Length: 342
Image (tube, rainbow, N blue to C red; front, side, top):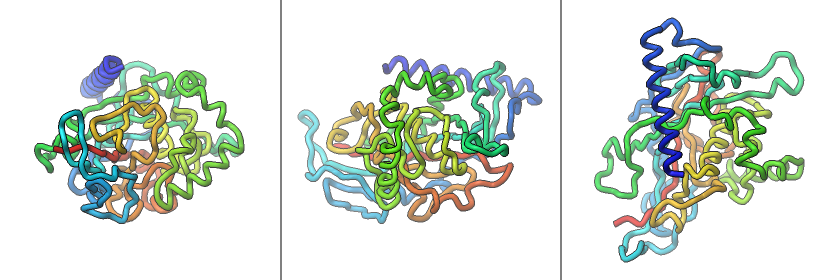
């Protein structure tokens, strides 16, 4: 599985490189395909909600408290990994960056760059709210570009701390080349249980998840729910209950995160099981993530600047969508980490 992940990363990087070369050689075709791509580069200083790092805890004690909700931490302040003792720390870390757009090959967080890969792939998903009326006006299809973004590590804010995600900025996943992301029938290969939750009772339970996520943290037991955004299934970018760009894009990003966990690409890092390293989490725990908007308008302050999965978008939608020039969304993904530090 690790080899497959590396191969997919290499393929994504190769396609991005070829697209850049093609765009440089033929700039008139670089904006091929429907829709105008918008966005800007993320400023690692001013566009980051630095208060989202907190709270920081040692065991069950919060040494740097915060008003933001936090997951449960191991009770004891000391831990043991094999024969190595350490201190049980808990903190939030920015680890990934994501473009979420209805326009294929639109790299929002790379300055709104739109590539022409040179072949017809990914364009099937271009769609938007219909003006005809009826149920189809609530359908939307989204693509996600997933970047490695270990911000604290490569800015060297904290040195010699082995608990941090290490590496450099790199593109890890492009959904335009993933057939499972664009076809709900093919997606059933990785989420066959979706049929069990396609009923009114299961969907009604998501109301409780919506309240919990907005007030504090989402309910992990209701894993088929994305809170106020809707159903977590199917694990693709086809959103059949679109209310607005913020709601639908956050739902698409939550589904994509779950998809990576189901494919064993993303692993668990929170709780007592995460003290000595990452562990398999095929059913994603929603409490492990916070999403912070970076495009079109960075959210760096306030209670809902980095809201958990499923929280109401009522408090975060204002100023986030501009007609024609601000309809492509970018997010910074914060992940909870519990670690046995030296």
